[in-house]
Length: 604
Ligand SMILES: O=C(O)c1ccc(O)c(O)c1
Ligand SMILES: [Mg+2]
View 1 (cartoon, rainbow, N blue to C red):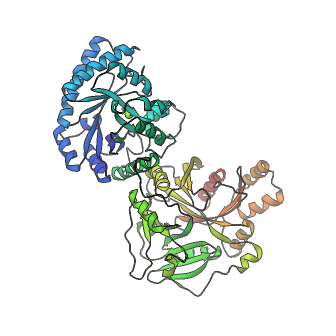
View 2 (cartoon, rainbow, N blue to C red; view 1 turned 90 degrees about the vertical axis):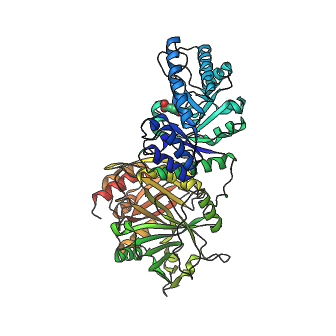
View 3 (cartoon, protein in one colour; view 1 turned 60 degrees about the horizontal axis):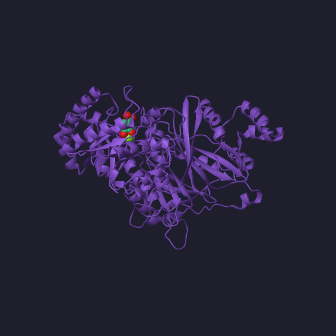
């Protein structure tokens, strides 16, 4: 279906919004009145600009407080409307949005509302304009779509129809099923918006917290299904009032926006992208570092062995069980130069790497240039919103080339016999925690869901001594890939966006002890924490005192238990050691404030 976006959804002056929408690949825009009023371009110039960019102007909006008012007021409203209709002809757009009245002068009289909207439509028709009536969720008398439809039906005018907006309908908890009873041709326009589930005033919720479909908690896909079954075939238009998007880079937001419509159309069966290829594990995590020695020492203390060296680049492969870390000491980007060590790339084990890359590309993920030498194993990669490179891998599978073939053995092999003897040691990467740029948190969730086919869990708030952190995990159903996306307390810049790699083991106490014996340092945790822990979970002193000595944190969920502890931070990166038992599903969120405070407290 055709795609459109309201200019209010994007940051910047009108021309920047239009350019961003066009570059992302939108077919059209809704022009928000404020963007026109503040633009130095004439309506004719805006029309030409849109045409040059290949954009249609699908809607002009909004007209407010028109209907169900006393006669004199309505006469003034009609004069105002006629002025807008002339403007719309200059813009070259033929549909205007009329919001249900919020005026204290509006009366609760459907017959009057219908009669006045009929007159408005009569006038609009003289200008070849159609009027799309939208029930605002906070409209004074008309605030549901079925009520708006009753009025439009009663007015019975060929230039009067409805605008349906998923936010107003779903936020009020209205059942969208009856949309199917509205003739498709009377639905003149469709606005799509999602929002996180928040218990707050609906106007404030709408004006500040809307987000793109798939980023919030409303069933926009189910809603769209009803509208399509009603026979609607106009544009799918995003109308997102969001405080963050107003400030973020318009080009990035526009791509995020279009991706949301691609995913939405897929879930409604309207448009098929190449099917998701869900990853089955983490093949590797790649650090780019200028702190060569501390990184090598840390990996050695953790029990990793440097097993390979890339045949053409200064990249080492460190292994332990199925956990693989690449350490890249080659030319580094600005982040590594500034921060010393950054987590720059992830290898995702993929059942079909080529198909995974195709899917990513179809969903507008930037395909990364292949800076690969002729002899290198082909490897596709795309950039996640935070810039992390994602490689689609087939590790040591006989039927496909493996990225490991680019590494020449160092002669040292990871020896699992010592671990097997007493069960300590790391066997795979449990999860990755990636702090996102503050304005890309919602985008990151949708990217990992849509592009990679991961499931998103609810977002959780975590107290940091200097602010609040939000965290939202995305994972495969079986937990073989888990990524905790986080966003820090304040805008600022990227400085100090910590990242961590969590390593799974079966016996944390022994693994942590070995790490300390090998010269590693674990983050010390305050005694108060253990005092509380003992009371909360009834742990024996024998047990918690061991944890306290090592800095091990403990959590339980409905499924099992988690024990975890943290290493020193190198650059922006630190490691976590985790032991999950009994199918524990979380990430130790209740302990995160303790960890954050401890990391702030210790020059570690
Ligand atoms: O918040 C508003 O006023 C407003 C205006 C126009 C819309 O289409 C809408 O959904 C909300
Ligand atoms: Mg709307």
